[in-house]
Image 1 (cartoon, one colour):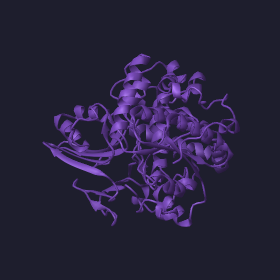
Image 2 (image 1 turned 30 degrees about the vertical axis):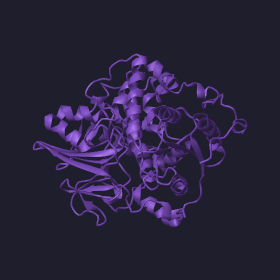
Image 3 (image 1 turned 90 degrees about the vertical axis):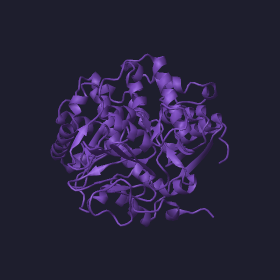
Image 4 (image 1 turned 60 degrees about the vertical axis):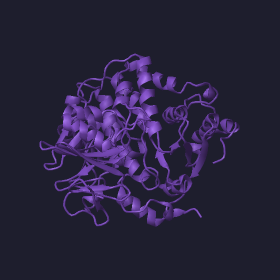
Length: 472
């Protein structure tokens, strides 16, 4: 009999979690990497090669090697590269896909870093480094409203910071340093960019697990669905039913899944049990889809679970700010940009707290973010709006969503790879703003009659009259 409610959720207080430092949590076990303790559900590999030692927690697939190649595991690959040089190590990291944390050690340095977009959260304070903020502190949260991530590299817990993408933290000193970008993305024509993205994504998908994909009427999840269909991998699609505002997504997703011959499930939200609410509040300070956690655990059978949000990096989400002559060269500009891009309900909370007070606290957080991460130096190589979306929007918001996902399935991010994003960012601005690459990636005859979400999308009622996908 299938488990339901809280019984269907992944066990443990901090699923797939880890801790590096003194006084580890009792439920974590010691790893082969000295000082690192992990949840028993955190898949990991460890290797020593010459002067280098590496531990990898999570899925870490190389997108440059053939699918059928007899390649060593991620820890061995990365340890061999690190033994050659730091440059070889970081170059190899650019071509790893998935959600992971990489701990490394040589006689000269030691540190930890996350995957391309920080999907694997890494938090730190003055004493330890961990996957979840509550592994570091039980202090009450700061009384400050936030939305789409906490400002800068701060968290609601005093003294605890989040490690943002493309930076690493020293395991001894806890000093943060930037390792990417090392150069501007090479300028590419559309055909070359498409070939790279398709090749790398197909390799990652074929090396990955069977997975479930959150499917909507939008372009990002459709891109993942088409890539998986082309790669011939086993995909179960699903869509949340959270009321009338999601019915268009459900209707289009059913049509899309049917056209590709994929199974589709509609997952109806419901009020979580008190036990689940308590567990989620302990694991993450940002609630994104709490009402869907238990139903998803029941419906998906603990498959790995993917979404398409990260592909937003490859488009241009802050184009209107560029057109209005705005910039991100100072912390107060970052704070203003963060405020302007918050949802109306969030801005109302900010203003109710005190607009000037909120802006001052947010500016302070972004000043630390800028100083700690070296954001301005990196923004000389990559457009600052693209970099901000990548490192703050995805690093501080998307990563928190995945802490909820850990409770019903392994978060699976096949497009989460610097080499893929670099190929996208190498396209001309106008091509990216028009989503031309994405439209080419999803341009297949099977989907010619399936609408794409836009102002001209037919109503959900009209779409729902079409065929439905195969039964799950």
